[in-house]
Image (cartoon, rainbow, N blue to C red; front, side, top):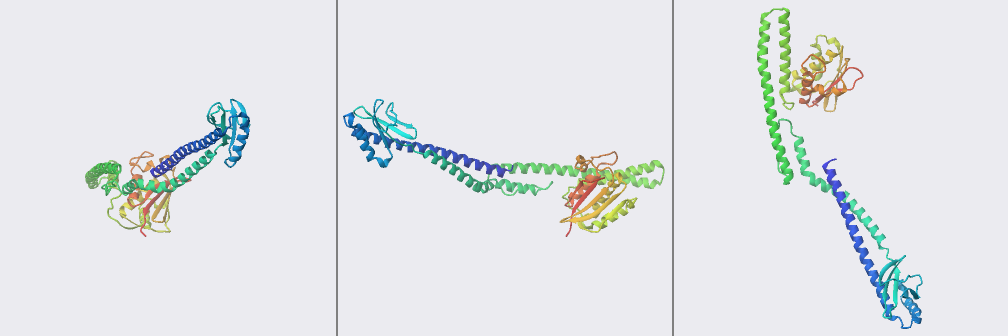
Length: 409
């Protein structure tokens, strides 16, 4: 879940909780006020009737009847009791035990004691405000939720905008590039994070530069004596088995050093670049193989890439040699899709297990004895360097290596 979604959900939940709390408090407060006003009206009506009661108990029923006629528009009923004995009025009203107000079925009744000692009860329909208040509370929650959904996302987006801008700046940084996080946001937490990231990136850039310089220097230092040794061996001119084996060993070491030199260069380093025809590069590499007839070409299309020609040929040569090392034949297909040109190399070998398809592009990772474990790493490195990728695809038999390079249109 993104931070924007979290902030939006939090704002919505907060709005719902606030609306529920406000609706509950309002409902309780309103219900109390309405109930208090209704009790006051009933007590006043009971007091008026108590003041009008005659001293003789025989005229109580008539007095209550007169009061009912006068207050008929008020939806009130009355009853008068002497203790628990009903003297007049509505016979369904129970005798109260003391003065005060209470609920009686669907009625709200309030009792007062007259000067004569008689107890007068005034009752009216109970106010049904609670249901209306519940409905109002539900509507308020609904409105608050809709408003929160509409307003919270733009509000949350504005809150996380500094983080979004910082992420965008980080996305455009490349390994070894100086950290340029630009202006401060004016938010203390974001600026602190920005400073920490800038410091970390600076340390990583320094460490990466040191590692690259060490790799390049070490490779250069190894290449010079190896070249001298190979030259001296060539001057000996002895075709004995020992010297031949030594020459092959030196040649493999030179190949290893050359690959290390290429891998020591970051993918972002441009280097010499020219327009290279992939069809020509593939044909040149195939013709240079000891047995070019083992390769089937499907080069109906052509694509131009801006790259270092020898490095592109080295990448294709490594890929083809790897395919022919494990298979008896290989098929090369050239095509393009959008901004990328792809070279598909298929062989009839044992293939690569699914769980190893990512790891084989790591330096010095080998699936079988022999080799240095740098061929596929070199291929992936150069593909990234020229705006593409290298990956193995599913195949019914053998391995399917797809190389992609950024195409010049």
